[in-house]
Length: 229
Image (tube, rainbow, N blue to C red):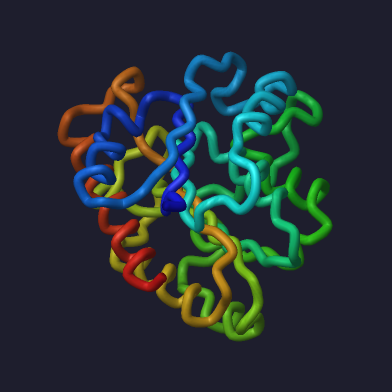
């Protein structure tokens, strides 16, 4: 059976939260790529590690949902979205714009992956960011792209601390608003993919309560996504 979720394990966060165990108990098929042994991947990704990540990805069509670790690894969205073979738009829900030019030259980074995706992927058509630029749900933008393919990238730091605990500054969206955004994206557009990042590891000070809260939010997001597909 084709897996429903692809997990890219960069930091061990998925195991600390208990995400694989939840998916197993819920009968949700998943594929887990263990990449935490790679060096040069936190916030910035060096070229050698980038190639090893690309070589590790499954061949063919990937699952709709991709769980891509904490926000330190949001650049994985660039690698995943660049595999698209048909035109698509990007909806980014994030407390940070992630389109900054990297300070270290053309090294792929969690803060510059959107700008890099523009360069790498001519199939990327249009981008809207919810969080840093606009706070309301982008109904007019979705309406303007009705029926077209959409890649939705979600960083849980777009939510405040009642719904997620991350190692970056956080926004003010509620979990219900994020779930509504996912629902609207699926109603207006053809969802090409959804990726989710954002969290906190034990190494960065996560408590048991932090991990439990992040897992509960992941569970609700997964149930929202697969309640519609």
